[in-house]
Length: 170
Image (cartoon, rainbow, N blue to C red; front, side, top):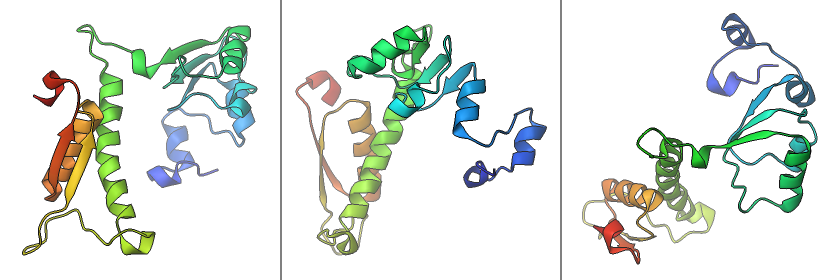
């Protein structure tokens, strides 16, 4: 109950919008025709899937354990990998959006762990008048790296980006 509280929605609001509220993970999986998540289904969740379920999420089947792939085949699950969904122009818009968020979050996560309280050196990534800006090194100029570099720059850090692909650096 109240699983949507963190998103500031009540069970009643979900029900008013047409959702059916269930009270266990098992019931949710057993009743669902389509299961949408973020990451690859866990081993526990895999056993809760019904045959023929449609599974949506970042599947990363190339690196998924063989047992997971075999079990998905046995269950005749249709797996839709967000990382492979393309629009009409061939752009992977879901992957791009998630990668942009990952770059943003990487900088905030790094800033957190630079704090003294977290065992860091007490470095503040944001601009402080009269203090030299910290240097942030970004390895890779793909979507995640570009997003992280942009966030670090807006915070006031000196940013260096390294990549073997000159086109990405440009």
